[in-house]
Image 1: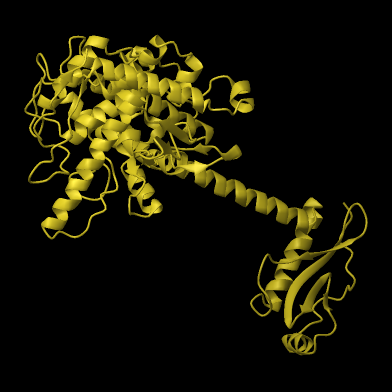
Image 2 (image 1 turned 60 degrees about the vertical axis):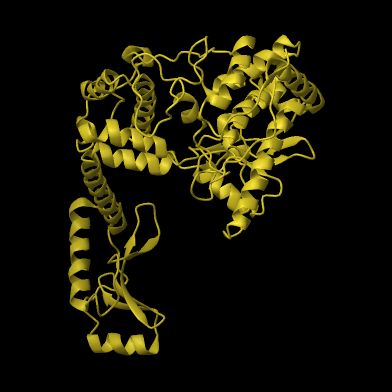
Length: 503
């Protein structure tokens, strides 16, 4: 590189008085002090520069200080810094701009090392909090799809708070080993929590991969671990109620201790193949409550908001598990259950008026006992009435703990959905029509993109045939009788339905 070639060789030409005068007048723009040192005056402010000749030719103005104007950077400080710059240039033949770039690079490297050191001591709990707050929050993504989890990771947080964080949450993430994580999983497995253990395998893997991608840890200590390695292998459930069991169930419901509302809900699930969260989030067309408010209540309860139209004989869900809307045709059998629910609603509102209670629109087909939200207890009501063998009947559970036991073994609300699909198949309907009725996601990408027909006419035929078959397998219920104290109560015993075998 070329040496410094100052415009003025006489050094120390400036004084503080001369500088203040020059700043006051604003002229000239560059005031020389000599030996390449200048004060640049601009907008009533003065800043120190040094002028150097570059190795590739030409001159450049280089700020002497990264920040600070005169008099914050005094004349003496500027002369000292200029002298140091000239001295360094003689020894290293490096221009001031290069020195400053090197200094900035060294500062960035130092800050990065300090950041890495701080990051290495992040605890498992701190990284978990980062992961859930960033990766699990619901948010829109490309092409109209959504990512994250609708509950914002609430269930994941509950599992980790119960089974993981008490044991390794305070440990630095970099010190958590595969053995530590396996001990957590083995502890969950020893408690008989097979499903929870499987969920933890999957969620721990997701969190640790997230940490690897952000260089918080060099590798995932659970790489290669499968659910089957901890006895939590996924098992596809295939339970379907037989024709005889459907009849047994219909006759058992009135004596099961479930409310008439709950009984109608069980049969409605069987008639529509709806998911339990869709049943629980069903509202009336004349709900009397703003839609936004109902949606918010449904989301808070983690159920799917929908609208049931008796006159139109359909049930519309604007958003479902598959992130699209769905319309369910209501057969005569399904409508019979809905009309029973409507009658219970009418009687409950009349009872409110008779007792001078504030007007309550009762917008949900299935309302929680207290509050304005939808009920979220169908699964519990069903399982509490199938307590067999060594299973213990817990407090606050149904007294009729065996009233819904069926010959084929335990069954769940989702098994009713599978049973509805199986009955449709036995009635001769094509699998594609049944998938449409159940709102299954299309697995073929080409069909999913190019075939947008929902086959609603064929769905209606399938639902009507299913309803007719269920009517044959079950009995004809009489009009519901509301409980004298609280006709809306979803958990109490309402007396029975008089069932007449039509077989």
